[in-house]
Image (cartoon, rainbow, N blue to C red):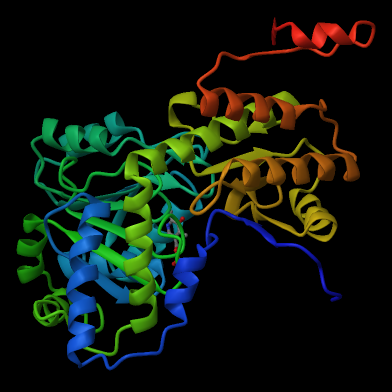
Length: 413
Ligand SMILES: *Cc1c(COP(=O)(O)O)cnc(C)c1O
């Protein structure tokens, strides 16, 4: 392929773009993972990552993709044949469910429509029926990256409590952690899993499990076989800042920087930036006249927007045209919605102009692909971003061909 000038727009909902300071940390020399310098790094990141999960309890870091942390959560707390209650939000819930099946767990998979979030009432009802308390864990995805739907975790906790059920609560926060408000302790989550390549702005390669006291107690009697994923091996070594095997030293050096950057910006500001990008993106898509995959406004994801292409069109063809024409990567539709949706990522290290550039690339692509749309979506996004950034009202001067002076007056849009 010939050289494509300018920066590639990586706007898939993970892996996300890494800030330069993070990339520079990755390029530092590899250090001795048994030496004192590593122990300082290990202790620092194992402690600092807790502030991102909003927990005071242990967080374990694996060299693996987030899928490994799905498995780690299950094998460390459950025994062969245990029942797990899961909820179908989209492709990621389906994959976690498959991990549980393969491990020999009995999965109750509550059906969903891939267009809305976890129904906490349905979970509560299922738990209430379980009088013998055979369900040992409830596992849900916080931000379903395949559909752009954000579910309420506190509501699931409340449903479990209302049913007076002792099941553990496990949450996949892979694409929400570091971008969307997440509270492991306050929400009473027992195991939160995550990965490095989404809101944490690192390349792929690290996975996390944050663990409650109740999950640690379950770990002592859990009988599923485990070796690499064993929490006790990890926690033992982690006390001194070390790992039981060779950790991903360079990614941990980059993690230290990424956490610093998140705190420098301020977590609340980071969350607000993602919400603003999500709202601008949706206004743009709705102006175009295209449908959002998420049907419930209260559940719109701040980090990814899944857009349905009209009947008779191919989302994959559209993405491929946009990649060629604009050097812009968008997320593919996954599983049941393959080729029916494309996903716009607004997660990690970006600012308003990156959102606008991305949306402009999509708007041009719609035209190239002969998909009917109402022009002006990017303008709707700009209006929103500017309004929020300046704190001004949504009024702007209106262009009047006949009377250029009218530009100085302000009219409602
Ligand atoms: C990306 C993602 C995963 C999987 O992460 P891998 O690192 O590819 O294993 C799991 N769950 C959600 C919600 C994700 O967005």
